[in-house]
Length: 388
Ligand code: PLP
Image 1: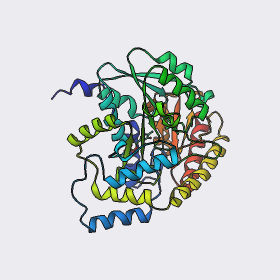
Image 2: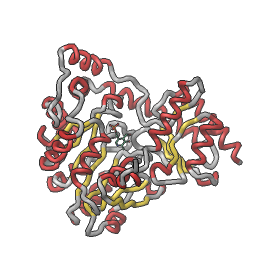
Image 3: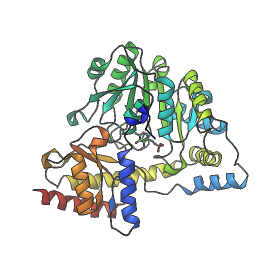
Image 4: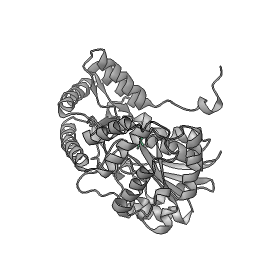
């Protein structure tokens, strides 16, 4: 059977494919250091698992409302009001099967054939693919390491055309760990309002932010901006719940209603007992989140200190998330050649920057324990030395 036109231009997720390959190597007994996976290595906190188990025992096994469990929606709105100064109510929230489905539903709801979506590069690998599936056109803005891979208001101005509908903003960002400052967010918001655009602010890494950086949601700039914003968040990264598939979008009610319509005909909603785990995650103590952040902080320091000793592999200091984006230009290899050779020769899995639109870099995830980081970075140093 012939593939549909829609799928002919879609590329499967490189990071997901690579991570599966690395995990398969590991389960066949090969000692691989896996730095390709974008997920916390921590187990989900016990009180969250307990709540889901209890929900199962209490028979919470039926369909959930397509928009999500009412209590969960309330708690998400409450968190966004309290922590992010975003004036949302439960009706502004839809619970989804993870941040990825949030973005998929949102883009499907907002984008028509020929609409342009502005995406700063390097970008999270799924953004342009989702835009293609919605028949939209991605307009990529390239950024520079010298500006911490952030776009400026001037660059945004220049990228806007009469077809522009949406800007995708991701801070803290994957793959670079960059965090937009308050001043930067405010100047981008001015341009967005001037051109009557809509923004989706992907804040999935909002809880993983290091000393010195602060997170401002663009929707909190002012009331008008809130009407031009959808905030995408979830529990995958903050509470080590990647496999639970719990995400959400907060947006103006008409957008949420369109997303509910899509969800009601696709997944019907989110796993009911998993949502009880989500409720416990938001109602319970947030100490688990700070403990994980402490561990990431220590690993980040170790990775940056060690990379500084490996010649000709530069990287900027991430202010959030758990990735370093390493410049490999001086090796003369493409990112795919570098990542393949590193995996084959040294058994270290990283993601080629090509997956994020930048072919002279690789992404290394430090969401793994220090022992593995020590071993893997030694191997990376050996690999780099042998290239000379
Ligand atoms: N947005 C970004 C920037 C991500 O890195 C990811 C996951 O890696 C997601 C969204 C999707 O998260 P989830 O696992 O909740 O679908």
